[in-house]
Length: 186
Picture (cartoon, one colour):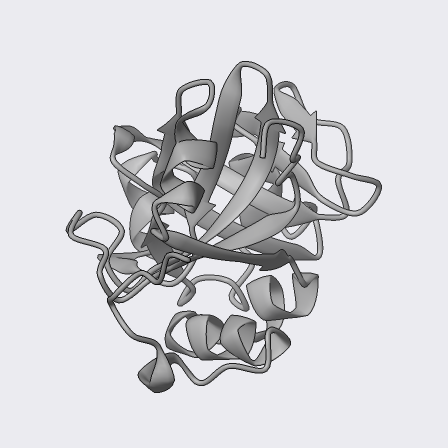
């Protein structure tokens, strides 16, 4: 399992996941290499909308279509910072291109553009992100902690947060309720 690359994959938490930050979560991995993995949880909201976030940052918002969008809990790392997963990737001050379709941006200029209706067409905003040390995610996979499947932008951007985990499970042809918390070993 040493040579896997989970960039642009979903991690689906198995029922036995004991870490409260990741129990019943769908995580999008936007970078995975020899230095570890980075991702954001995409199905757990916080008590904040984009409109509230713009108000807190004193960014005037003229884009009424996005005001009610929920802000998500991206993970337990840097909960005081905002992160934006977006399509198209575009070029912002601090953007990591995930692939030709998606970008992950940490700079304020993208939030200002979104508020003005000049940002990317599809956005997902989180507070915090998730990170794994080198080899950690591979070890967790071997321990039956996660299922993986190639990510689908339509699940990320076109579904409500609570619809995303079941939709990712359907990509695997599995109903989440049929999963067991017990690992099987031959």
